[in-house]
Length: 73
Image (cartoon, rainbow, N blue to C red):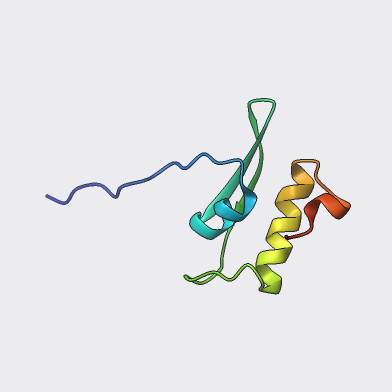
């Protein structure tokens, strides 16, 4: 008999960390799921890739962070 697949739930307030480690990225707003985004980026994800930047912008916008606040440092 095979063991069921394992799952891990990582809770973070760091969008870059979420995109680096997660396969789906979820955003909770007011205790409810407001966004569920698949992170279809290859392993060894680069923060400088356009795909990473697009997902980062989308998550930050859902969190109400826009403009200069969303710029990578």
